Every structure is written in C-alpha cells, then in structure tokens.
Image 1 (tube, rainbow, N blue to C red):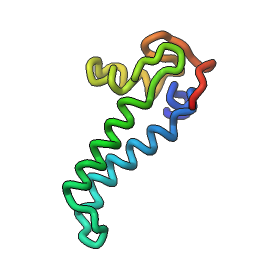
Image 2: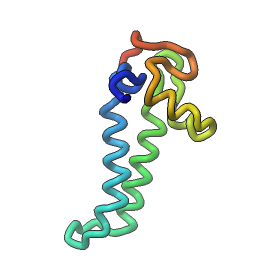
Image 3: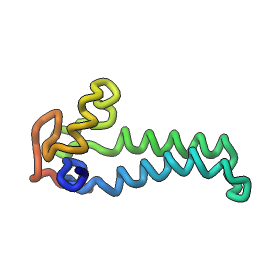
Image 4: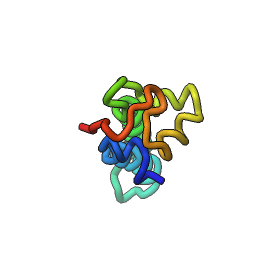
Length: 98
C-alpha cells in the first residue's frame, strides 16, 4: 500500500515516520514513570508530531499539504496512502522529496 503511494514516490516516507513516532511516543511513553517524560511533555511531543505531519508532508509540485487537506476532505487520506499521484494537482512519479 504505502510502497506505491505518493508519499513514498515523493520521498517523504521519513517525514511520515517521524510524525507517527512522535505522536505515538508522546501518547505512550508518559505511562512509564521511568521514562521521565511527564504527561504534559508527552502531550506536547504528540502535538508537535501531529503538526509536523500536517505541515511538512506536501506536494512538491503544487505545495498542497496532504494531511491538512485530509482534515477538510477525509477521502484525501486514502488517496495519499494508495494512489501514485497528488490528490490536488495529479502530479505523480516525477515529484521529488526533500
């Protein structure tokens, strides 16, 4: 699924991994007192991960922020994870990541 998605094709899989890791870590790590991360710190980490994904995963051709668009139009989520083209401008495998 993700292998043929616009996220992978555009080289932004690492951004998705960072966003998800921060979101999950911020949500789970504070449950373990030995981690030293407070619930406030975990909440901030989770919010930063979520914001990173929303703001940084975008089309290199048209600049559309796919996860921001998906907040307004949920069908964009499926397109971003399964389609090889940008849901906004239809640019595809010629997109390059940073």
